[in-house]
Image (cartoon, rainbow, N blue to C red; front, side):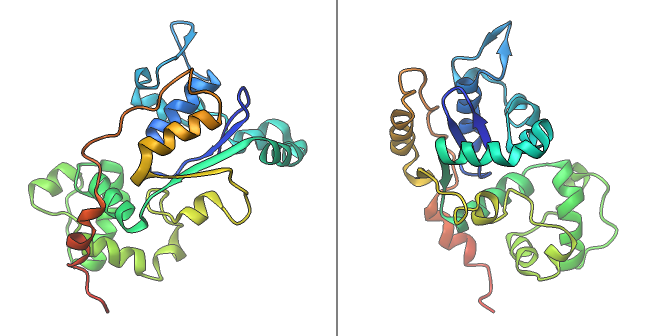
Length: 231
């Protein structure tokens, strides 16, 4: 949960659901990042490397460390009084998007931490290259079917919880415990973003960045999952 005390806003970010641009919006609203001594005014001016840096945002985890035993009481007050929002999307399309960005593009961290175990367990591969570039050059990539096998394997989460890029929304944002004021959809992002900014009364301060045209589309869902056996 990311908190903006200046405008009384709490955002639960869901990876692969426009969270990069919503984090940019939260940085502008909270004025938590400066550029040459002045806060950013345009979300698109904020470099991507700062957007996902946890030190940039005020989160409930920081709250806990800062206020100790008083933090629970303060968090309850904020959760009651602040406007709380999140954005969701078709969960199956979100999985496709996560797979495309983390396993079809060279990503050293995700290769070593996730792709190597998947290739060993579900593709019977051994002697895998040490780097993702070597693996890609040799044509060694996790298939979408391997990824789904990994997600459905009951052994997976006995070792470690799902990575946030494919963890279920209810486990990231706990909508049964938190009464969200606004739940937007990626499928109607432009309209929902405009409505939310009006609700927050900040629509005169900034505009939500335009939608990324190469976004994973719902129409792809049937093609991607056609390769997955039903049993």
